[in-house]
Length: 198
Image (cartoon, rainbow, N blue to C red):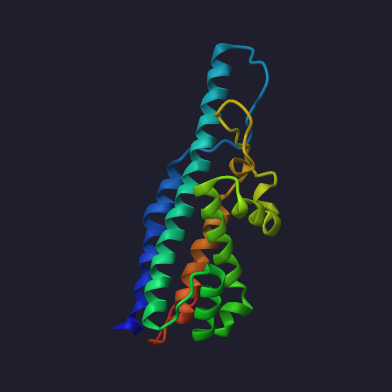
């Protein structure tokens, strides 16, 4: 029964990504360039406001999906690790210990780094500024870089560093792919799926 965990976990995460994440994100309008400054007409002003809201909502949706993926993967990994008698509270150490049981190819391909980044992103999204935010900003500064679309915080006042994080759909895809590959390499049954199409 325990041998079936990786295959079931992989299938569940894959279905969630394909049926919920991709479908939802493809339906959300995203604008490549937001205009700022004085509008010439009321229509131009209202269109600009609508575009800002659209991009903000898309950004928040991606963050919510990172939280969901991280929670799903953490529950899966802790369940699998208990069955393999791996006890570890520290997330980074837990992943490394589990990889040592499974496949060295996961470490070679730096899948562990991607899963750790996903967990750190989820902590920043969940808790805001703090130790996780400082650590993530050091290890993944690209998440604060200039995104391909602009997103402005709609809340007035100073913007916390944690709210300036920009998780793109490509980042979310990387996280989903890492989960897929992780469980594929942990799968000891015949014909394990080691990679996905996204």
